[in-house]
Length: 334
Image (cartoon, rainbow, N blue to C red; front, top):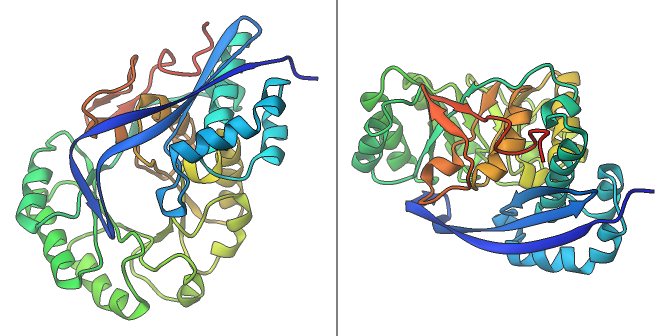
């Protein structure tokens, strides 16, 4: 039986440096739930934002964890946690805290516990809000260190095309992807794609609303299409074959590092490419996702870059890459 634990849950408010716009939403701040687990003379931490479009808020995360406090504090394994809680932010926060706790107790970093040979810096995208084209151009120019940019679209076809053109005009040197955040139909997607090709866009995330996946069955796209909202946990991966090319893994969606690693391996088995993303958060949230990034074709872990204040110690952005020292989280030292 696993050793008893003490659990602490706090909801914190993270301020963004500037409003951030996507299809259907504008964010000015981001609340997160932070879980701290004490056990065996060590402490593990995990952070979760939840999944806003599923009403999975940090406040709801805190209520869920309170209702399961007794089961968690009796001592719970990551495998048992997958049975206790569904995918989502509550499981993510506890799962990541359990990984961190084990690293502290064993003296081994999480990447090693996960069976990886190393954890090296990875090029990450830096995300541009779906603002007016002139503002998007300025934002792209203000990220000179970026080697990869991801532009948010909002489903307004003429304006989105102008946004894409503005970014490419500002930064002809970068890899570029776009995220439609469910803003398109199969018909408007057909109009958008040639314009993306013209601008040298290399990846398109979630063009159609969640629930419309069948419309992409057999759809021939000149650009790889990534599933984001269309895939939450491991059970959704098989249904992506023939519809999507890439699986975007977010720990808040799938319920933590444990499930994320399972998804990455299953995606590879099904010949799908793998991406890791984030729901915005501090370095405490990016660090476990950085472990997943070691297995990915595409990395989008820029969340802390847009915060007024980050968790300490922090990940570092240098030369367009994210660097995550073991001291940030899961480093195998108490």
